[in-house]
Image (cartoon, rainbow over all chains, first blue to last red; front, top):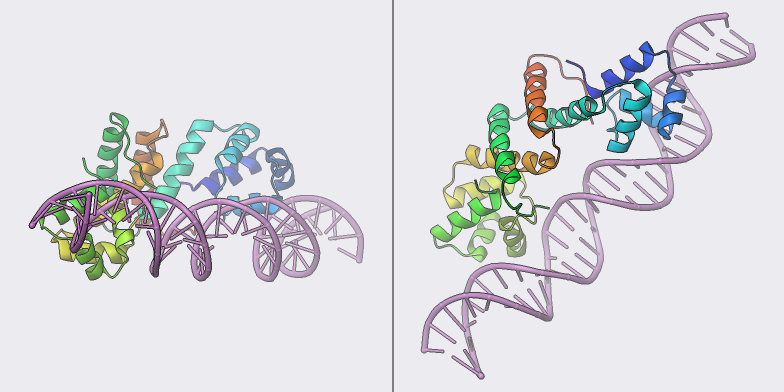
Length: 104
Length: 104
DNA sequence: ACTATATTTGACACTTATTGTCAAGTAATA
DNA sequence: TATTACTTGACAATAAGTGTCAAATATAGT
């Protein structure tokens, strides 16, 4: 089970690429990429797309890993975490088939 | 399928309580409570606990509704939403049984 | 319509988070 | 020691979230 950062770093190293090279392609400071790979910062969706391109990763799969990472860390400390996910799933199904009430 | 705001408003009305009364008990401006009930603002956990008390709602259940609401709205627009939840569940199980890598 | 009460709305100042940039730092290697 | 790769932390700029308040709007009773 890898974090998004681990996935990115492992793939980058396997391809023999440098932080400098990847960050240039993604058009961000290499300090930011370094932090992303160590899970100190979260990439934006735009960054993820570019990263998927240069690292030859599946874009959708990467996005899924990213969002699920975020959610996992968000609720891992709740002892009702798995119940939360079940309810969330129901709510999503409901929202997808109904007009969406606004939530800020 | 109710949002957290709908749950709170319905229960308040059923109990015949006014915004003013509930917000006083929770110790927040009634404007905030009004917005919470219409899903314009999110309550804090402290607010939720107080709300559960005065509205005679189950505290844990309310928390579950709250967090799942948040997650549902967070990913409802992703077309990979249900896959995300599945992966998130696996990650949580993993995180709960392992030392937790840091993520900001 | 008038009054009183309940709720909603928006502007505002304030705090807190998140962001990108940069320079100086460490680490490893030749 | 010189070079390259990476990390760290401080900084300013921006965005996001928060509580407060007063004015606007609704709702109901007389």
